Image (cartoon, rainbow, N blue to C red; front, side, top):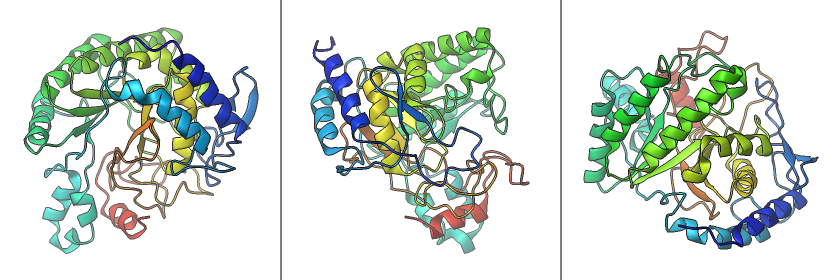
Length: 375
């Protein structure tokens, strides 16, 4: 579907409105993160103006200025029906009876009541090179979701040189050729069913850790994956939009464009992180305006208490965090397609230099803490 001629103008106007409203530092507790603690927004002329974060001035329910939200609604109308962005996700989202939380509850009935919110809340299924039969694992959940009239959410996490920046989740496909095969194996598993694909968290945030040749390879692989997954018909694809304390909107917007966001539904923010929903919605709205009004989703799985302060590697298993808003498409912002539990609450971020469980391992103490501290 061709875009109306007026939409780029609206996008620039939306960015200007947001910048004039004065976005401030993103979550005052960001100190200690390995990523820059504040990210700089760029105005329409490209000069530095304000820092990413809490919104000042009047705002709507989304955390973005009310005037900008109204303008965004008009600019987003065509995308809601499909077109270059694909279709919007549909509720309900799939609750996997074989999730890590469900397995933990079955194995330890004494803790079952405590972690019951994790068992019953739809959470994404992570798809990577650790799965012995990726097509079968994805198909099982895709078909179960379809039978339940629900939408499965998948996180694809197998790009070559995965987690090149931090290293706690290092691995991925051996090379570009094997990753292209992997992409098609996942696509066969999803099939024609409604699904959300979160495509390679951190892949764009960490891309500057790669050599120029490997950066180009990564962009090619992401473009290929966007085309494969978006071509399924029922799948909404979201690229890596990093988080509020990491990459400046102008910088991540350029990376998103190179990765093929114009042919995806949009991008995902705050994946596996802790920044507050309103801050991520505000930042996401700015990035949307810089990428042709692409839509976005927010990971709210563990952001109920916001980011931590005063500890090293504050992005990695920080103590005292809590569950965030439950998955929903009722976000209050027409550009924010959904709030999702993308990271599995209770699954470790990695050793974090503190002897924590390895990345992805179930951590009962953390799971219980997240439930106790739920927003």
